[in-house]
Length: 500
Image (cartoon, rainbow, N blue to C red; front, side, top):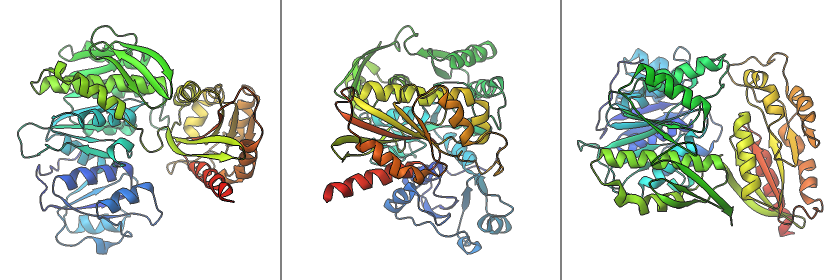
């Protein structure tokens, strides 16, 4: 953990970001620029959606080069994807004695300067953080919120800064999505924590469930005396982590939320109709969310709880904010690759909604597809999934294979390997997953390369539909790989065909 501290007021401070196009890096750029920093950055030439976010800020990423490091740079913040011993920017910065911090260290340093809250868990972090920020936009609480992706209701930005936010004030708030991988969240300094879920993931670093659960327990125990844990009572892993942490730290306030919770944050889920989910929360009463999936309603409950607890910490009466919280929930629109509607078009005579989702864990796949089934009733669901990392696919092979029960048709591809893994990937391949999935699902197809599936998928979308699907099709690309390109290509093809 770095001992380098950052200034609270960044006015005129020059910061260079190495790997600036990463989602977390771009989000931190937004935060520091709002605090007055002068930002430069470097990255690969490939274009990412974060390029558009950076361009709005007047920042253009440069190619990696020692020439990027000039004498007036005060700090360098870098992504863990780049080796300080090999990257030319970092080699030059270190030779000049410029303080260099990993992204997680910089985020931790920023969190130490405010009354901070962390959003943690294996699932739901980005959506929960996005909902927190969207609610806070309706309030007068001075806060900055950092999510792990661009959020539609943030105007496409990765962050939200309230109009009355001033880092120079003695009291201000910071809410950030935090990452459990390699215990990165241990650099963060929280006063409050949301814990959405705990289950086996990141098997290359956490071989067992106990390993990842212990990481979350240790993170909870970072809370100061009187700090608050807001945990999901409906998630077994979150409950186990909360109970274990409480045995170690009885001075932490434990607040459950969800359908199994009692009190202020008990959730009651109502009907889903007209592309809206209706629900009620103990303290709040009735509210609505215009994104699909029960898991999103749970995220909304967690976000509402955190906002209310921060309002209380600010010395205000939370009951006066109920209408604002309800309005914020209704205003939330999902993040990039989080149930993101790419577009709507016709494939032949069939109406098609194209959606892209980052879900890359069996639990996320199941809950997301179930939510789509309820939210987009009367549509045939075709899901294109690309598994991410050999270690995760191998460890959860049976769970992946049985995760597509709410899809009418499944398309699979080769495994999208992590940069940390060898190209061979061991004995498990995309075809292994394909064969396993066929045992659970009667309509599964395999194409090694993503875009090789384009013609087949287009023909499936244009086929006459049965009476079971009066509203058309829903085409979903899922996973942490690059199969989103297929959905984008199909949407473009449908739009082009409509012009002819």
